[in-house]
Image: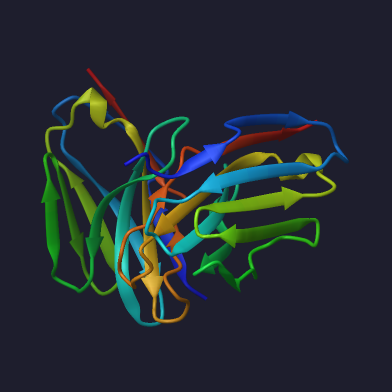
Length: 111
Length: 114
């Protein structure tokens, strides 16, 4: 069974204080690892897809990296508008296009 | 593009009543997914369709839950009879259907069963 574990569950940062969120996964045949952002009262919004170990992707203050066992979402000099829940999901070899989600990391950035 | 559309956005009902949630996927997307999100269990896949055909409904919790996709632009998730433990946010998502392609989520329906 595919498993995705995110840590920490919650993270509070001061504006400008860089940090990283972790996503550990156990799957059989990774097809892709996805990062989503979810604001309160809204659906998840796609951020990145990573396909193979060593791959990195960046968007503004966010950078996602992938190893064979985990992914990190690095947040550089965060701003209050980066406050959200960040979800990690994996798509594995079995199951057509289905995603298994972690429970997310709730990030709060204070001014 | 209007994105994935869900209705209603909020639903409050009493235990035992029938509830129907609706979803319109993004035009041209041929895969549709229904998820349920709770604090305890996170985001769980209930069922998904490809080309209007249900592919995997193993996530549907009980026979009280049913889903249909009569055409490429409409899907429903029905709960009959509803129970308080069904209270959650229900999301619909769609994708062009290729492996490795991201899913696009709707705004969700917040269901409260009293």
